[in-house]
Image (tube, rainbow, N blue to C red):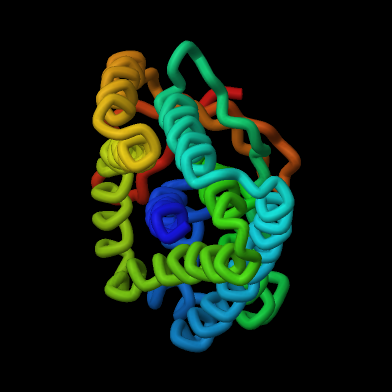
Length: 281
């Protein structure tokens, strides 16, 4: 179970980091910064504090779901080999979904945080509320199968306490991403940051696919030896070769409009604006 716990922990941190490129993650890094908070007459440090508190609470809820799955895992009482084998298969499937092999579409929903909160409520409401939605992982757009993988691997630990802790790690990691915006004290810095951030989007996706494949190979090697690792490696090559462009279907909670967004490696940007998606309904 130590191996499964380690795999679940890595999956949680990687999935949380990759999720920063979700529409909500990008929104947080453009709407909760020193320059934007000052424009609203708010204190950045106070808002960030509430955001982190909300993210931790959201992670605890995420961990509660994982703990429930761990109870199921305990009832199943799988052998170590079966548990690790299942982990290898799940991680490989997660890689295939993130790569969109054969047109696979990640299950989920296109919900975003409600941007009207920024002007309607005090900072503790939108800070804490946005943080909770980010930290819980399942409330808004899910950009990587790693979120589901984290839950399932946590369930395979068969330890509710361990699974709950993994959920908190996920929420905390997502929450800490808010500090990427700390240096953005001018509009020029804000625009420059988002141009670079969007340029790194495809790289972050491919890195996440790589993490999935490493997790799969590691689990297979422990469960089935070198032959298992080689088999996963061969299948992993197929996943990499079959990688297709990332597609998002985003629904704004404020406007109730669903937008289909196909992302390429090059962001749409100008010299004086934060990058936006090339999108069509």
